[in-house]
Length: 481
Image 1 (cartoon, rainbow, N blue to C red):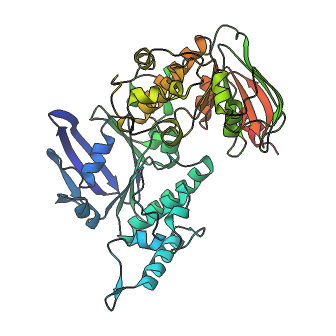
Image 2 (tube, rainbow, N blue to C red):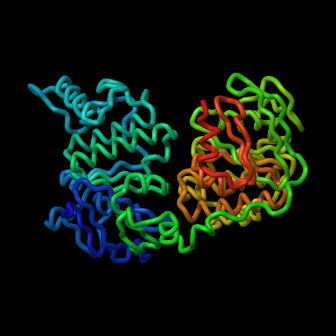
Image 3 (cartoon, rainbow, N blue to C red):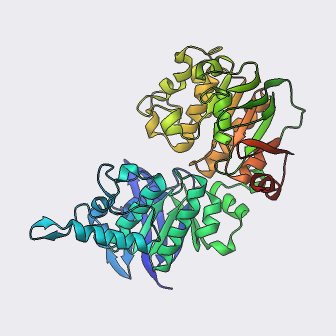
């Protein structure tokens, strides 16, 4: 299968700092080629060169064997290259069709031909098997998954031959991920070359035909996905074996009970009884809609229990939860965990300044403790990588000294190296005497990190498993009818 795109010896520097070192990359029509690596590996820079955002300092780009040079993103788009960024580029107050044909509106007698625009958009939606919304739907009323479909339709509307997808599942719920898989496969069936950037190893093995690993701006390897194992892929990315990926489980028995819940419930949850002990990491498993996030929010006081007994207190609001020493690292760090336009220091002090903290620790010491890199308290939080942003969210809680920490998808959207660092921090916190409750949709992570696992189903506890259960055992409880 001949390459529709070939990038050879691509080099790039910014302000004298070398960020790409002679990288080779190619992708064939009807192929999914994954690009993976830790943050700072050079993935985004390489793709922005392909998109015409940056120009390479050295190297060569060919389409169908013909050298090309993209001086502007429009040059790349006209050549059939489309990039779907993690942050969508849609106009929320316009319709789907208006977004798809933005700047290329068909005209009739000098006026925009809305009927032609709607019909063309409807046909593209049908070709992707999408029937949950139409061309006249306002984008702001669509879900994140539906907006992603619109971005793909935009690419098809300009006859894209190469579609780059940058962390396409980062903002998707678990049930929406399968829908995205179907879209990627349809693009492949149409003969479109797909470049797929993701931190999630499961997605790589599910979708990719080939995998390219970058590290520190250099090419580590390009291999067929069928020839790779999870262990080898992790080793290529971070330079260590998968057996070292999760810290050892607690060897000492757990300590005193720091949080106790008996027969608690609300509109979503029922008959919740559990204990969280010092020094222990308890995993919380369950399918989408099982009530996992609702449970941690109830424990924290954001969506309180309305019945039952909870010790030391059943919080009626967030301030009561914080005052009782309960912290919540939320699933959506950008929307709920940080103020992106404020500095790292100000974000680390958010809870302390709110008033009900039990005590306060020196911010600089806390930032060192979470191993923020670089340790710059004055840097705006929005400019940090996903892994560093999550460390600042954690620092926000450690600054006020919680007894219990609730983690909702703590490693979502962060690279493999940052995941390992967060795993180590969570284990260190437990060994330091905190009680930890951990939600993760990635079963290997949940199993690898937890001393025991509680499984939720339909808002109730379906069962509990000891540390190191099989994925099959977890899913049997989560999905039983």
